[in-house]
Image 1 (cartoon, helix red, strand yellow):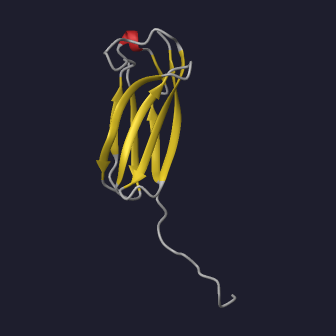
Image 2: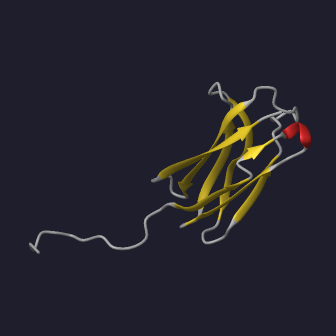
Image 3: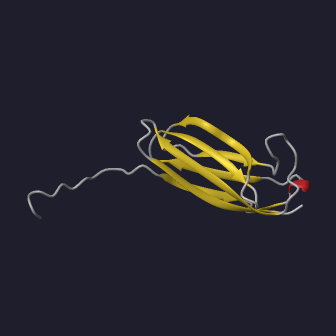
Amino acid sequence: MPENVIVLEGDTFQITSLRVQNYLIRPSYRQECELSYSLSHAATVSIRIVDPNGNYFRTLIDGEVQVADTVYTLRWDGTDDQGKILSVEGDYTLEITASDLIGFNTISRSAIIRCRN
């Protein structure tokens, strides 16, 4: 290896796991979707649900600081921020965004939740 090459080793900042249980839900029957995720490093996390038309529908977490190597679990019952059950059937996108605590790195992952009434 040439002398002027620097090899960086170590952990990269990432969302280490993202799992959605109950990929198909029927909110009118009180079904819920469960989301589990973990982070490689402490981060500020936001989780939002986007409707089939691309509009933000629900904010589950907004800028909460969370620690690394912990499995976080949330539930979504198909309601919007005002508690109303969704009226548009289709594929909703769950977006999770994490930023390291110094604001240098930001990463995002997403998953699809199919909703029927």
